[in-house]
Image 1: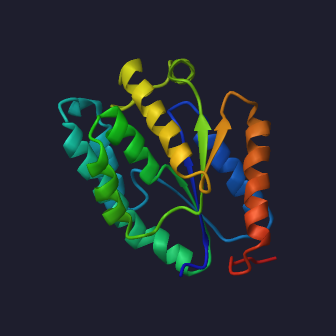
Image 2: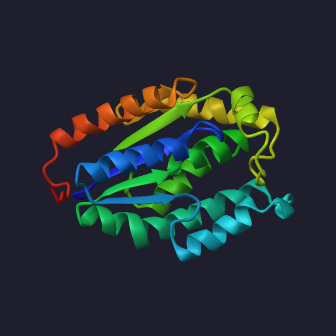
Length: 214
């Protein structure tokens, strides 16, 4: 039984995950919690090398199946090397994307379906987030927010792809109402943070195994 708390942030590109992760990390550190911040794909030396392959625009020929296996490989290493050890030590882990991204992007966006869920459940070895904050944003709004950014391979996908990804996230929110917390990412940065902070505070009040230094 893990002692820590595992939080993931999900949502389409441009939804503000990185900003909300930084705000949540700052709040938890101020409260004296031992926090590990990480990301997917990546998080470990092996995972970061896989990230480079996955997001490189020069790899436009990459098949959906290859993409799926690479994400799962990075995630398996991430869990075994970083996430699970941190949780076992009673730390709070905040991860920018996790298994739900693969289900939304490869399962729905690439239309690979159920195999994505099966392969990634094996990769995470029962290590699932306790809370997932899903920042919801329309594909059109997401594209507008990142239009000036130097886009990676996934961000170069067309709107139709992101519409399928959005459907995937909607399904995940329905399937896991106890874990996935949907938040309108069109709200103000402060408003979104307030919702996230309130939910995390509620969970922490009932958990006495989380490492704290205050």
